[in-house]
Image (cartoon, helix red, strand yellow):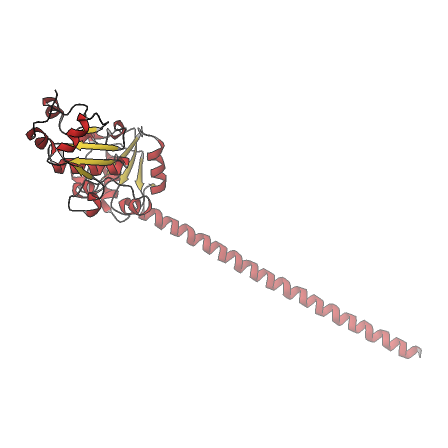
Length: 285
């Protein structure tokens, strides 16, 4: 009996030793696996970080300038009526510029560089191109920096992005465009004369030159020459406007621009000022 007990204890001790050895090997195996996994994860993380830095470096090489989004630029434009300290520099061709542009943007294509005193070097300059692939943008930056202009941003995505995200542009006014035609209404000189005779409040903007306006104009008309409409648009305080000018084309283009800039409802006088004069209606000096 005692012998069997001794043998049983011996077997139990052997089994405990086996279990301890198995657990020991298990722990060693776990440590090895954990170490390998940790090194793999660390290596992968380092590679990802390296790839990220490499991508950023390539991005900076591709776009070596600071940008401003269309939404951020729009906030700057509507944030201040005068936009002191801000210059919107449109470097596209003149034809593209007059077709449509951002309000208050000035057009200086590359072939008209250097800009010299045309813009204030202390201002924040926003360069506007056609799109993100417009090579003229990078050239414009280089030329500006050669002239010691430093405070420069680029409109990200150019006019293509602006039109897609914001939409608001000033168009020159194309009489053949259905969209532009929908922005204006028409009246005859007789209708305008009748309204004035009946003392109906009429807000008239005369877009002729200062010299021609001084030679004779409709009573109560305000003179804002066509070329000054954009920069003097805030002087137009009414929404319903009668536009008179040298000819119907000038009136039409002025009316379209007023609609674009002010969401006004302009009326165009048929036959323009020559038609008014031919009818013998009153003029004052």
